[in-house]
Length: 281
Image (tube, rainbow, N blue to C red; front, top):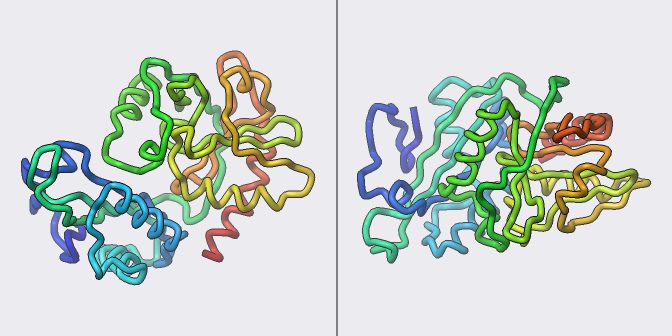
């Protein structure tokens, strides 16, 4: 089932046309959200990011698109699938309506929501090996547009294929200035002694919701200095820890980059704090 413009429908009912702008031009946005026992985690943060992204892409925001509407439409589908007492992953998709070429005929939008059950209700850390490398065939462009969760994910797709072909769990992306900006599926954090670094949004990384929560947590950690600053690939070899964040996995420690291995103690110490932030959201 999906929620298409407020109506619960079977996935066999095809509502997307060949003129769909999300399909033809990547003229679409999405939010990936965790819902636990009927509670939308970090709902306000996801909603505000979606509204800001729609404004940047000059989409017309319907008057009905309130925070209450956003949550209610998500929960409507979850209840219809009898998943209210479980942990689920939600994808909330918004796309500009059909018509036009690069210049759209309208800025009005439609939306659809899909859900998938998750194994764990709270964030956990798997102790399995997690190896990454740089993906250098293509680069991310610095700037605000790269921070949006649009349907244009060609870089992540070909990067994921590269990772699979090379028996890697993930890859780290570079921008055109050759700085490390993020992983294929999340933001990146680096720990060296008592200094924590993460790339700034304008370097081209996704404006991640889990990233925002970690920044709040890390700013209050005694004995550590937090820096939003560009990260050179050379710094990866000198780091004590590297970890990835996104809304679905929470925190994923990296255990190996090329010949460098990392500890995971610091990342593990943050999981409980992130779960606490989720419960209070």
